[in-house]
Image (tube, rainbow, N blue to C red; front, side):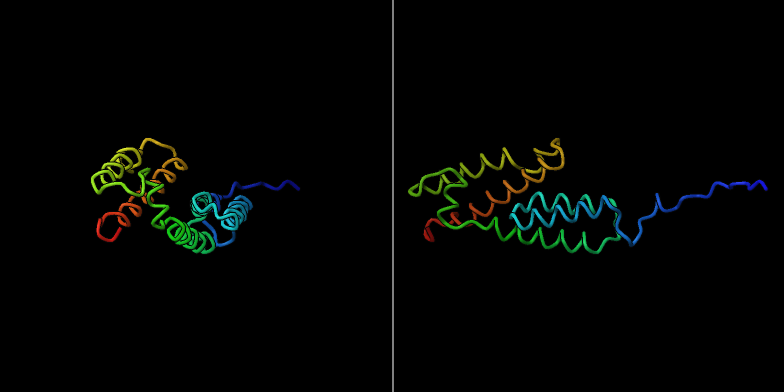
Length: 144
C-alpha cells in the first residue's frame, strides 16, 4: 500500500521551546566555565547567545544576570587600581585625573564603539565602566 506523505509544518524551527537544544546547552556549559574562570564578559556573551537561541530559557536569563552582577562587582576599582586604570600617578592633580578620564571616554564610549562586533563592543563597555568607576573614586581631591 502506498502511503502519501503530507509535509507537515515545522513550528519547532520558528518558535522557541522550553527544552534546550544541544547548541544552547553547549553555550550554557561554556558560560558556566567562563564564570568559574572569572571571565565575566565571555560568560555574558555566551549566555546572550543561549538566550538568542531560546528566549524562553530560564537558565540563560538567570545565568546572564548572575554573570552581569559578578562583572559589575569585579569592575569596582580600589583606589590604587583606579590610578592604574586612568593611567595617572598617585600624586596627579584633579585636572590630570579629569583629562585622563576624558581621554578614556573618547576612546571607549559606547557611542564611539558601535561599529565593533559583539565581543569587542562588550569589552569597550567594560573599559568605559571601569574608567567611570575609577573617576568616581578619584574625583574628589579632598577624599584622595
